[in-house]
Image 1 (cartoon, one colour):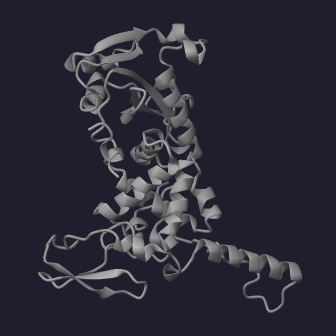
Image 2 (cartoon, rainbow, N blue to C red; image 1 turned 120 degrees about the vertical axis):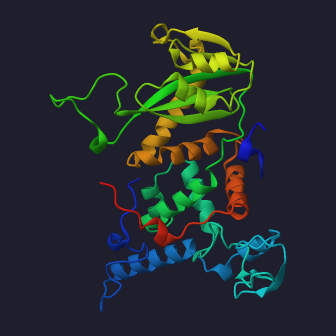
Image 3 (tube, rainbow, N blue to C red; image 1 turned 180 degrees about the vertical axis):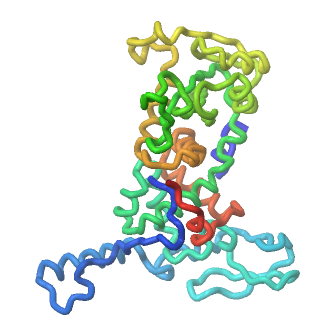
Length: 354
């Protein structure tokens, strides 16, 4: 299947629970003041008004109709099909009852929307910001959310996208090359003289990028120069046998070419320097490198161990469909159809990263 999940429908690591301090975006310095100046009262009033606009009460939205539109066939706890409707909750959302294990549940149970306290409509704005390369910090300010909420929602989104490229098969003429992205400063290893190693050292993450002009597959290959075995393992299930691979003279892709019986056209990257985009035969993959680097730079403080999550989000952005709202529609449907959930306290219970 060409599109995998797409064909259907900084940011620093989380602190430990004991150190989570997240100030409400609706709080002002004058909330507990006995007296306020006219300007202070005005700023406070407008801040709270804007916050309320961004955080409607559940019963004030149309999300009950949306949630109730999804057909529930099985119990999210035991998988039994012996379930029945059991009235509605105070927000008008259909409740269900499992006849086998006696569990009560909602359509949102065991999904990323479980235990939500703010409307799903806010997810739409959040996803729009992510797709537009907006950092988590900027999103938390724009949407009047705590930063921990933005980070928590980001991880939930990544759970939905974990298999986004599993079924993508590139075909025809395919452009391939690696790009390198530096580790964070506190992770960089230096030589005895205090200088950084030259070239593609272990201080750089290697990212393999392949595109056929319509779809793109991106894989993290480890640090330093990639091996032929790593490239073969990462891309063998994503390239149609007999296709043609356009790449540079690096030998890393030799096993991939041999295993899939690919046609191969190689260019000396040194001779391509200085050429305009229109004259550079590797421009299709170079453009993907540029866009991916721009995206990662927008989240420059991210933990490098989370790189696969950021790659999957970027693939949602760069692969079809083209329209942003169509991508949001994919995420929304995955949110209800994917049996993945993550508790806030579970996520932020992880040890801090130095």
